[in-house]
Image (tube, rainbow, N blue to C red; front, top):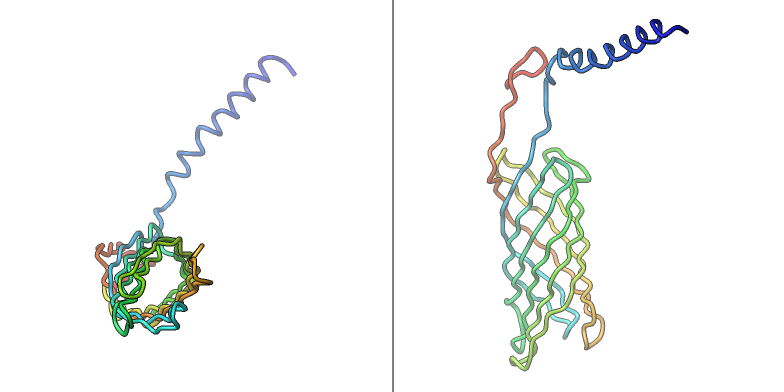
Length: 196
């Protein structure tokens, strides 16, 4: 192979790689995208079985979900269990962790694994404690509109670490309402994406 032939081949190869981005940019824009990032906030009512004294506690529950993309995101929640208590024993949770959709449609089935603080007030205000809580769970959201959903069922099984009075594994069932606070981006109308 002569130096001239090698130079011509090298120039042809470089020209090919320089032309690829131009050809790729000349392709049509995508006709649809995913729903983008979403932030929802909500609240509701929670019932929990507490192993400490075998009590059933109830109370308020607030949560927020952040999805940077449509299938996987983060959930943060706070639960205050002060109803149906005895001897002034109350509990609270402050948890955060990953949340993923298992099925998405009008019914959105999700799984989650939250980590955070399990707080307890002991009988007659004798003492209180905070313990690392691991909380696997899941549930179902029902979409009423683009912005409002009913959290029809949310279940958590918490594992409190190093609780001094035996295993502390409360579980809870909750329900509530959530509101999307981020706007919905409308897709452009094309031959393949049409408005309803």
